[in-house]
Amino acid sequence: MEWYTCIEHYHRTCITITELVVGNEYFFRVFSENMCGMSETATLTKKSALIVKEGLQVKMHDYCDHDFKEAPKFTQPLINTFAVAGYNATLNCSVRANPRAKVIWMKNKITIIDDPRYRMFSNQGVCTLEIRKPSPYDGGLYTCKAINDLGEAQVDCKLEVKGGFTFYELMQRGVPLHLIDKYMNESKIVEQEK
Image 1 (cartoon, one colour):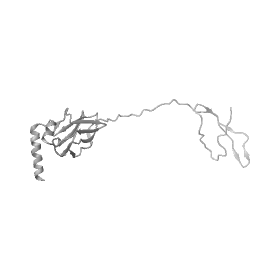
Image 2: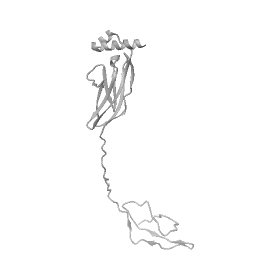
Image 3: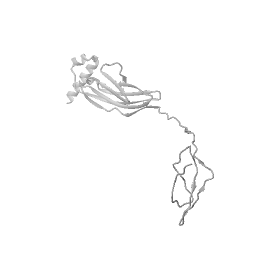
Image 4: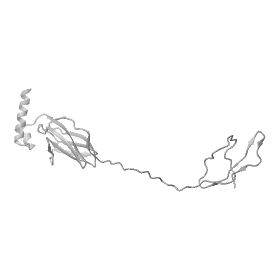
C-alpha cells in the first residue's frame, strides 16, 4: 500500500477529500501536529473508503411534443402597387403555416389558372406573383389565399397599371373586344379629365 499526502497543516476537525478516482479503495491516516511537533503514529481509518462506480442511469424526463401545426397566417401582407405598362410587375407576401399551405392567386376574385402572363412562386413561405408586361387591363384587386387542413387566410392589394396600349397592341395580347372597348373608353375619360 502506498501513502500520498492529501493536505498539510489543516486546522479543522473535519475535511472532504476531493479528486478521488472512481473504482479505487482508500484508507486515510491523520497525524496530529502542535507546537512540540508531529505525532509519531497516525490514526488510521477502520474501514476503507470505496468509491463505487455507479452504472450510468439516464433519467428520461417526461416530455410532451409541442404541436407545431398552425393554420395559415400572413406575416407580410400584399402592398398596393403601381406598375408601368409593358414592364414586369411583382406582388409579394409571406405566409407561415404547418403543414405547408396551398397558395392560390386571384385577380378580382377569380382564380388565376394556366395564364402565361402570370408566374407564381412560393419558396420558404414567401409567395410571389409576377405579372409579365402588364397593361392597364391587368390592373385590379389581387388576392393571395393560403389553405391547409387547419384553416385559411388571405391578403389583398390593388394593382394600378400606368401607361396605355393601342387598340392593336391589346388585340395582339388576346384581350377580349368588350374589355378593349371598356379600356379605350376609360382611357378617353382620363385624358379628358386632364
